[in-house]
Length: 80
Image (cartoon, rainbow, N blue to C red; front, side, top):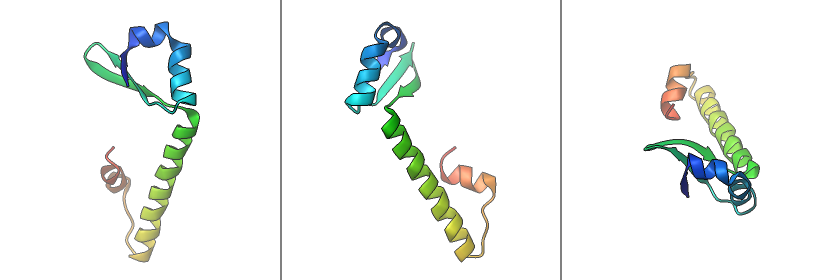
């Protein structure tokens, strides 16, 4: 769901309820630009865990292949 920042500000409680208890991902738009995402803490934690697992897998692969990734390699691989 995408909503303008003005609507998000006017209905913070509703936005948080949708994100936290209904599992919705709320994208905030300011003018024509998508600027932020609101998601429940459990969803955030799952994403953080997935990121940590992915980074661990990359590190394990680099040790196995006797190849180390630079910070630039890792950020390129994860799209940062």
